[in-house]
Image (cartoon, rainbow, N blue to C red; front, side, top):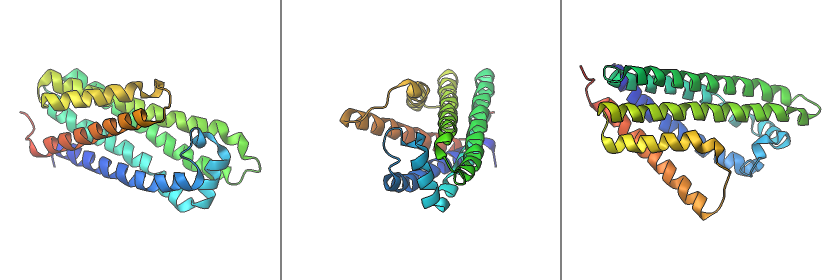
Length: 220
C-alpha cells in the first residue's frame, strides 16, 4: 500500500479514535467532576476516577500511544505526496510529527505508572506536580502537532498539491492549535460557538485530506 494511502487511512482512524475518546471521557468526567476547570490537576478527583473506574482509565491511556503512531503515518503520507516540490517543509513536517509522537508516548507511559503509584500513596496531594507535568506533556504534544498541521497547509499552498480551500482550512486549524495554549479558558455561548467552529473545521479538513490521499495517485 502506498505511503499516502496509509496516511489517508491514518487520518480516518485518528478521527474515529477522537470520537471514541470523547464518548468515553465525557461520562467519566461528569461522574467524577473532571469537567470543572482545573479538575485534572486535583489529585483527589483524578485518583477517584482511577480507583472508581480503573478499566476505563486504563483503556484511555494507550490512546496517546496510538495517536503518536498515527501522527507519524499521516506525516509520512503527506510527505510522499509533496516531497518532490517541498522537500524542506516535508522534512520539518516529519520532525514536528516525531516530536508530537514522542511527547504522546511519554505522557501515556508516565501517566500509567504515575496513577499506579498514586493509588498506593497515603497522601495523594504530593502527586499534584505529576498531574501538572502530564498536563504539560499533553499540551506540548498538541502544540507540536499543530506545527505539523501548519506545515501541511504551507506545503499544500506552495506546491498546489492540495485544493486551495482545504489548505487554508488546515492553515486556520494549525494556527488555532499553535496559539491555543496561550488563550485563557473561557465559558459561555461565544466560547461554545468558537469551539464548535474549530471542531467542524478540523473534521472537514481531516475527511477531505483523507479522501484526497486515498483517492489521488501519488505525483511522479
